[in-house]
Length: 168
Image (tube, rainbow, N blue to C red; front, side):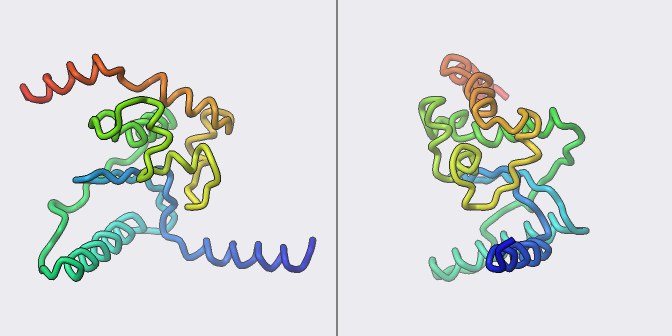
């Protein structure tokens, strides 16, 4: 193995050893966010979320010359217990902008810029951990994209659900 390649791999291994979570999927929405995280170290998710929320709050408060919390309440989480639940959760996250009518077509799901979906279909520059989800699809990205688009509500279902949500 080339010395430069070996050194780069060793640096990557050392760098990754400091991670407390792997991000499997995410989406940032105008008024909330979703993360699908894999905990790598004890209390990793709690630490990651706390650090993230504190950093965003500090940035927002300095930029807007204000004080106080930005996010209420504290984050909520659910433990993923099966591969099916993991795949469903990734689909829920990646289709959230469509379901919320922020984007209009299923095809736009893969182009939504504030989501990890682009990492599943193109170069993974954000170092999202794709393996847990893509392993369900035999690491075939096209099968995952097909799954996302075929299992997303159509516009009629979205319209019905928006009325049902208003009744609740």
